[in-house]
Length: 112
Image (tube, rainbow, N blue to C red; front, side, top):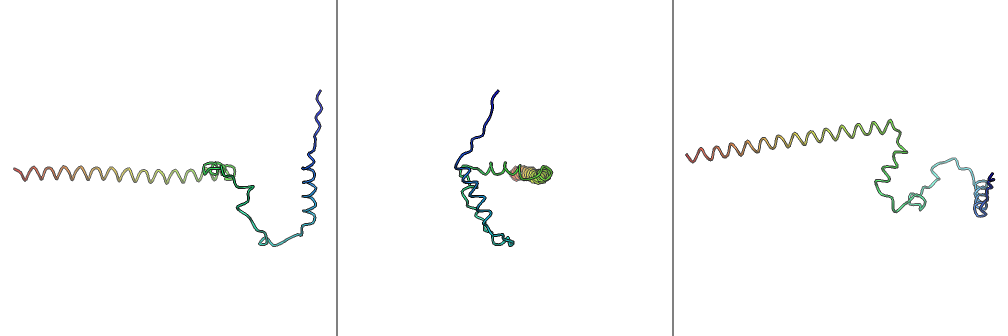
């Protein structure tokens, strides 16, 4: 039988003690406006992270019900735009070919 023993890292223990001491010495602040956020902190910034990685990470943040609603809205907008562009293209094709045929018919009729 194997017995497992946990070996504590000395630096980790010193860090934990320092954190506890810092939290105990910190004054209690009631006003949230006094806190400053640093959006450029090195802990949160990953130079290798792509836009795709960030969008995929949203799956963890946005609940499934809202993801479904967003997906439905995006699908409806896409289908509406696609349908509109398709119908516009068909109408343009019909008008163009009709104009060409009428133009050629008029051109042949005037030669006679």
